[in-house]
Image 1 (cartoon, rainbow, N blue to C red):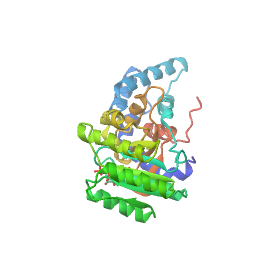
Image 2 (image 1 turned 180 degrees about the vertical axis):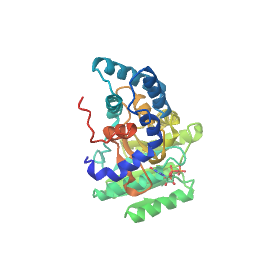
Image 3 (image 1 turned 90 degrees about the vertical axis):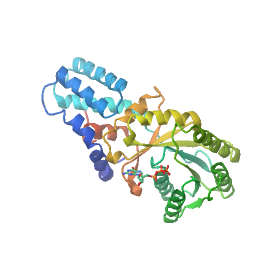
Image 4 (image 1 turned 45 degrees about the horizontal axis):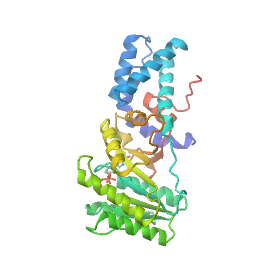
Length: 315
Ligand SMILES: Nc1nc2c(ncn2[C@@H]2O[C@H](COP(=O)(O)OP(=O)(O)OP(=O)(O)O)[C@@H](O)[C@H]2O)c(=O)[nH]1
């Protein structure tokens, strides 16, 4: 990905992470690298929701780097921190491949207001721009506004929407997948109503919605994406665990990173599954269509510590 063309959204991401950066970047004032500095750095990482365990591990490695590579200046430590964050985040880079099946059925889930419907609109636009035919299933049968919102997105992007007032979401999604097959569509995206991990009956309904897609097409859904609000911080981890249990996640979209101090949570999410983290397909950095960007570990880690992505470490 060329960084030049991404300047607009990248600066928005940096601005969004600015409260985090005040914590982390504010520390890099050009002073000495001593124990006090490293302790403050660990605290800043925890404040940015990187998580206690991951922050402690990062500091251990930084201390090793300082000893073994002879890092002396805060600027050198800042680059080493960026490299370490990038190393943690890199396994979570992933591409959402819609060519894996025809139609490729993508189920979206998340808590209320996470940004599912908005992200679906942005995804549909991306796929349509790539020349794919897209069918949206309004599985959020509870909220009239969500259906209307999808219909508007659909019209704007010449994407068809299947919805049903007050219907059974599993039935709506079954119909949509069947219609997608019959019409030879490339992609079917199923929206689902927002729900909290504590609402067991609604979480069980999510399993049912998942199974209904499998009934309509063997192997579906091919992707189950949890949309996580980046401002939720550590609470996002509980959401990942719960939705994975009921819906078997294949990937994540993290939204609202344009307005949060908690961007470090991506590192905590990535650390959840050891060597095989859930891919973070996209990050949301605003409300406009182009504000859904592929997740890039180097860019994100750079923004977190306040470095330009082109500023290479040379280490
Ligand atoms: N700033 C910002 N706002 C976003 C982003 N993504 C979504 N939003 C806003 O978040 C609000 C909620 O988004 P929706 O897409 O309606 O959320 P939802 O998950 O579909 O909500 P429910 O249907 O209630 O579950 C809207 O006002 C969106 O414009 C983002 O990346 N950045």
